[in-house]
Length: 139
Image 1: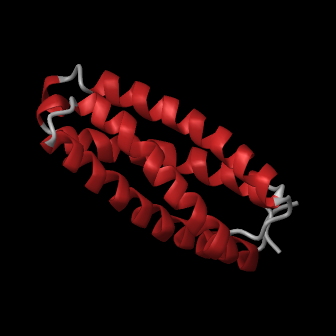
Image 2 (image 1 turned 180 degrees about the vertical axis):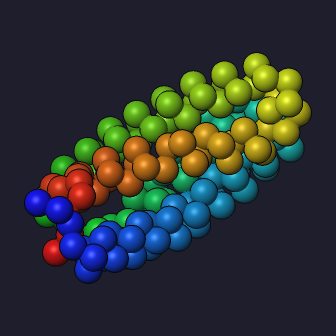
């Protein structure tokens, strides 16, 4: 069945709210990333460390403001963290690969932005399934 315009609009609004929460969590990630760099951590280790802090913060925002939970809190948290672990692995792998590109190694903040953009949709649909047991359909 082809989605109707109101359904597409609801999905767009949901993605916009998700993007706002994700941007807030990403700000936490970036802030910690730059603080860790100031303490002498390598770019890859700082990214590896800051990402999970943003993930947990993002879970709290998603639970409160984005998705309606169709599972118990413990199960939702564990499944969301598994999705996030996949995102973390992809994030760390891509960031490490990007650090091999001289331009991106110099402009590491741009590499971090590219990685976040790539991981966004994976996380949105994965988390939506975890919270609401569905991918695309809207109420």
